[in-house]
Length: 162
Image 1: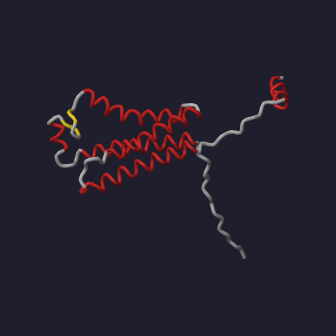
Image 2: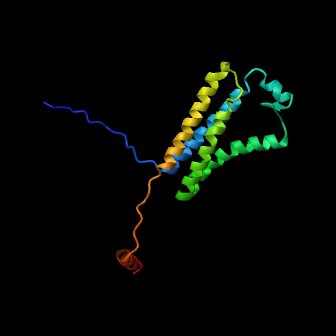
Image 3: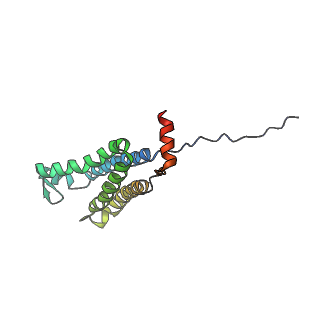
């Protein structure tokens, strides 16, 4: 008589480096950021305002478009910078940029009617959650214990040179 036992075939779940987590969050933020702007074009009157040369009470100008480009370029650059910057600079950069983008994201709802609360609430809510994840990941970035300088480490360094 053969007894069959089911063994669980567990999936491997290797640790993910902080840089990869943060880069993935910035990538998700960028997709959402772009799609929110795209879907915003479907609101009644938006295209008419664009044709009239106005975006949210501002006249369309080279300065306005440059500012809008910068607002998209910064998170786009953060995707690359989060993977390439050294840890200390990476951490500081992510803390600063994510902190600045939270109020900027919330500003998108200013002046909107309550009819659009679900659209802006969901989009801004997810953007803020992604930025909070970036902040938390950067803030809790794992540290490597520093090796204290002293006779023991000096001897170790000499051993390594030989």
